Length: 358
Image 1 (cartoon, helix red, strand yellow):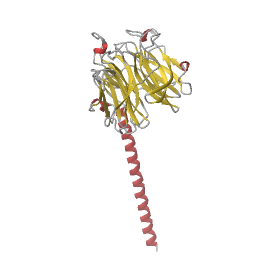
Image 2: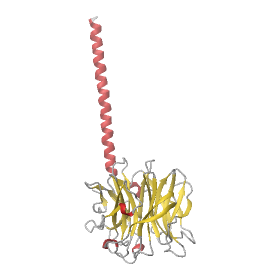
Image 3: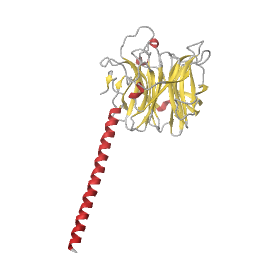
Image 4: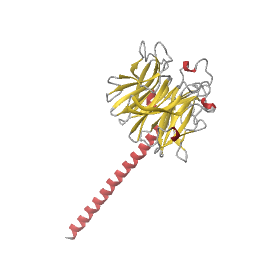
C-alpha cells in the first residue's frame, strides 16, 4: 500500500513538472513571437528613402486585406498606375499595373495628375485630375470605379467628371467619412478671388457626386502660400484625439512647396468654414540641413499593426530647378513616421535625409 502511494506521488510530481515545462514552453513561444512581431513592426517603421523614384503626389492606402495600395502622378502625365505590397518599402519594387490611360482627344486627354485610390461601400474608386487634349489647362476632377476585389484586376469604369458648383480649374480631390457622412475636399480656382486655387469641402450623395453648396475652407493668405503661385491644393485628412486635421500644399511646385494645416473638432459642423482653424505657419517645409526640397502633396497611412501614423509625401533632393518645375521629373515618394505633440496635434518634424530614416 505504501509502495503504491509513493509511486502515485512520483507520478503526480512528474505530471506537475511536465505541466510546468509545457506552460513555460508556451510562455517562451508567446514572448518570442511578441518580441519578433514588435521587431518586424519596428523594421516596417524604418524606411529607406526615396520609396519610389519619380512619383509625385503619392497616395498610400492600407486595405483590410493587409496590402498597401499606391497611386501617384507619373512624369509623363499620361496614365494611372497602381501598385500593391505588404509593406510601404516594398512599394518601390512592386510591379506597377497600368489601369487607365489618357484619351487621345477631348476630356481626360492631358495632364493626368494626382490619382487617389479609395475603397467605398465595397468598390474601388480613383479620383484624379485631367485636362483636355485640345486645352491642356482646362483641368477638372474625374472618377473611375472598379467592383473587383483586387483593384489591379477587373474593369475600371469611367464615372465622368465630378461636377462642382461652377466650372473652373479644379484638381486634387480627396474623400473621407465622418460620423456616417462622406465628404469631398479639393482645390479649385474661383474667378472672383485673387490667386490660383483655394480649398473647398462639400457633402457627397455618392462617391462621384457632391450635394449642396461647396464651402471654401482656405485660400492663400500668408507669404509662404504665395511663392511663385498663390496655391492651396493637395488636401489630406487624418483624424486623431477628437480632432480632424487637414493638411494641404501651398505655393508653386519648386523648392518652396510646403504643407499647411487646418484643424476642426470632430463634433463640429465640417461644412461651416468657421469650424476650421488655420496654422499661420507652414508645418512641413524644405530642409537644407537634410537636402530635401519642396515637400508636399502628402497623405497619411498607418503601420502594419495600425498603431503608428506614417507621413507619405514627395520631395526633391536638390533646390535649384531649371525651367518649369512641372517639367522636372524628380519629385520622389518618401515616407517617415508622423509624431504627435503633447496637445494631440500632429508633429510633422523635419524632412529626413535620403537613406534610412532615424
